[in-house]
Amino acid sequence: NAGVTQTPKFQVLKTGQSMTLQCAQDMNHEYMSWYRQDPGMGLRLIHYSVGAGITDQGEVPNGYNVSRSTTEDFPLRLLSAAPSQTSVYFCASSYSAWTGENIQYFGAGTRLSVL
Amino acid sequence: AQSVTQLDSQVPVFEEAPVELRCNYSSSVSVYLFWYVQYPNQGLQLLLKYLSGSTLVKGINGFEAEFNKSQTSFHLRKPSVHISDTAEYFCAVSPYGGSQGNLIFGKGTKLSVKP
Image (cartoon, chains in turn purple, red):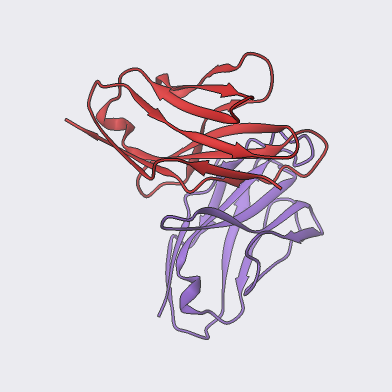
């Protein structure tokens, strides 16, 4: 049982490049989300999904796209990377978003640097 | 809307001393409350949660927290800390029942335990 798996662990991009951060969970969780963590800012929600085919924006969605074609996978796409997107990105999942109990399980993170 | 304030960004303590990490929240609806811990270069893991019932909740690694509705606080405590407790701690809230359970995080408190 791997839990929430994020790849890659580290990535360096040049301004304007695009890339996809991968997230997969093997717990059959309905709810998945992406956060970014910046020093002194805590975690801020980028996008989330309450089930396959359903996504919505969080607090800081600009510059990022997501899709949810399967229950297991929730990739995050950077269309044209900017230095302001240098951050640590965490994917999380939980059994359901609708109960509100929402005990989320986090991946180990992807450290992204945009030069 | 909800917000979370962690009153201390850094807390240095000596080993075997008690510690309290403070968290206040603001919300127009009832909320669930969580503490997550992040060890260096790792993802977040759940430390403890308050959903309902007894206002004193116990978590892993000897931590406990007390929910105070009148003061809208959820402070985390440990009577005697170890070097291994050095980590960043995040307080989070989620709206109560029936709504999408997106977590709102505080900015984090870095606990540094010195020998």
